[in-house]
Image (cartoon, rainbow, N blue to C red; front, side):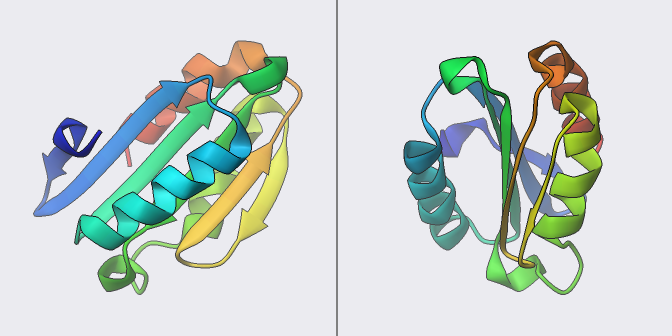
Length: 109
């Protein structure tokens, strides 16, 4: 997934859809935010037919981007909620039909 980051204004953005479970997604996001500086990682998962959004922000960007704020905004699309800290946040929801909208919204970050 490291090669899938898009460059945007000197920062890197990864938005990915997957069916991996929450634990696997969390591990991947923590690994990527450590290895990829100046990055925002958004993983949208539908494991078990339950939509979930996970956001990771590399430590060098936490002053500018808050994972908790990003996840709250995206969670509206899946009729969900969640939160976290500036570097890592998750949200679960009820509306799998909103996954595509959340994906498109995340690409605009």
